[in-house]
Image 1: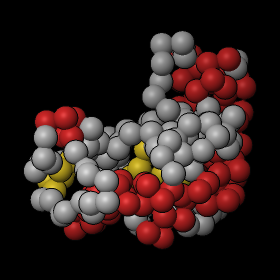
Image 2: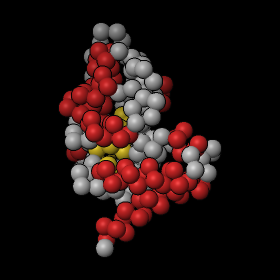
Image 3: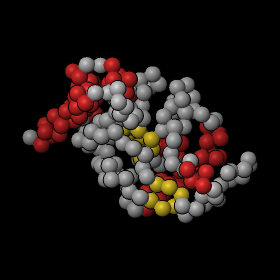
Image 4: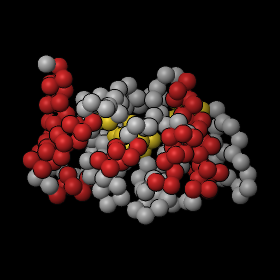
Length: 208
């Protein structure tokens, strides 16, 4: 438990590379999977409850961050700075998954914490296309095919939006195609395959 007014002390960090994402080249459009949080954890957290909550979770909701930016900077970001340092020390990119409206803390994520990539985008907050144009020159943008959009759209609609996003980013890089969050059961295999198929098309085109 972090006491009010108490700056968290450094802890030893142990990293376990996530086989699905840490080896991915985030400048390529070939990776079509939804990126999970990088599996990094603090092994010397003070209590079991703290250890259970040590992995990155959503920092916000539709309109703002859950804690104020000032509270995040004091209570949360010092731990994440160590996570990023640990990932970089072993030559791995540090990838953040966080839901919610990130506007007030994106400078912290990019320039303060030095995360390499950000995952989780939602159309009702900021569409991935807008997020890419706003931040894509400074941090890799991952996923962003809105889960509600994928669930409600025809396979062709999903495929066309995925193709358009890959065309948008093809010459600039810094993007990997995937869903905006984890894939729920309401998304059919056909809808998911339409998105993944767009990535495969792009990869084949690059190889020619």
